[in-house]
Image (cartoon, rainbow, N blue to C red; front, side, top):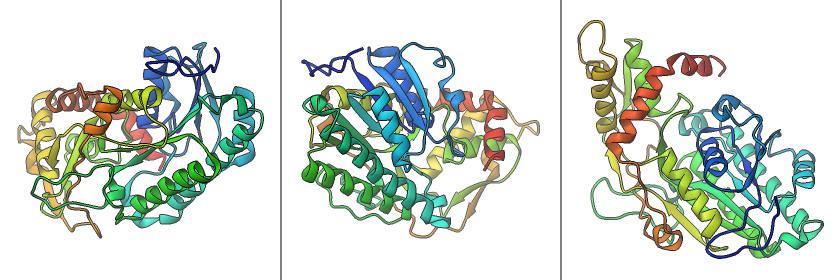
Length: 356
């Protein structure tokens, strides 16, 4: 596998280093790159509470996949990984990502999302200035961020976030990702690191760590426990299936323009209450409660979390035009498959939660 110069319409096959590749979105990207492209993939993951090699089942012996158990904050270890694998691209997904956790323990988010990103950037800069100098022209670093860096929008109205929206992060998580975005752009401007930034909307699908909304609803419902819903459940999120998100990242990697930012979404706005009721309705059909009562009866409204953003909505027109990507998974089909997956993998979910 060679890391040769890019050729239209996309990058030639090369070694792609994926940080956070044993996580939710990262593993979907790794599976996509191995299954749908000719790239060689090196998964780098610290295997913290949210990392699990089972999400990469079937790739352990694949000739185009390697795994490196490395923390992105460990500069010497990252340097050695880069020296041995000589990547022609990096997709950076390693991050702490749960807003509630960031409120309770923000320091971990600063360490991984800010310090880890800066560490990775300096390792890449050193590589491109030295042994990897011949790769610089075709090299790509795709930094995967979040639409939460933009703050929030009014609950109603036509406004959507776009690549020119001002940053206004509200949670420690969003602030840490905003900072990491700025570090990426600074390394690109100052040192010439060929970088692209993406902002993804709320992502759902199989293998998501079960602390997020949809798996929480499934697990609580199956256990007959109250299903907590912040405030009145009116906060709006823009949802995208993990397979669509992974395809978008692969398209940006291959056809995105260095220096650009791309907002990735599926134009699928739902209130949290709509999502919870939809999940409960599917559970009534797929795994009826022994009592015969609808799972929606378990919904319990709780005090809103501090600084809860009202609405996220992203305009993905730029990424659609630039790389020819479109979301393919409809909300109805994607949610049904996701709920069915979590029902079938309840034991995995509870085992994962027991480690935290």
